[in-house]
Image 1 (tube, rainbow, N blue to C red):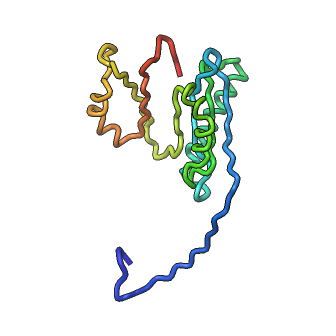
Image 2 (image 1 turned 180 degrees about the vertical axis):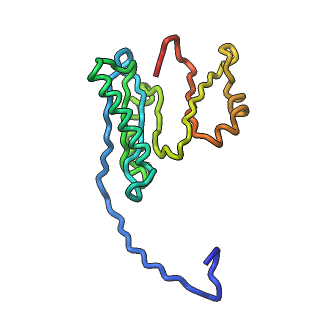
Length: 178
């Protein structure tokens, strides 16, 4: 077949689809923070998929549920609570245009802008790659760190070849944790 048909060949395609409205359901859970309960660390992943057993989203779903399970178990067994509220978000209808997460953000935009410290998207974790966390401060020289422009130049090769979480820790005071 290739990029075109030869000798006037034709292809007939019979498409049988329909457009219908469906109700979607996001699943949101949280573990309330001890010191800053109105600051949110959010972990998210979608749970819809085009096929069963796919890496996308099941690898991220496994990570999301295991982190939630471990934190809740630790809370029950020891009384420990995270410093900030940790939210666990399972989004619906991602494969149809990021619908679940978009609707959530649009509905709670003002609260999220004010309270969210970091959002970690755990979708599609695969292939035994190492998760690299890099910290960068804009006025980094006084802290012995690389500034934002130098960061991008210095780590361009690493950024394109690895799974990287980039956290801007601009305005974190002493003894603060996620």
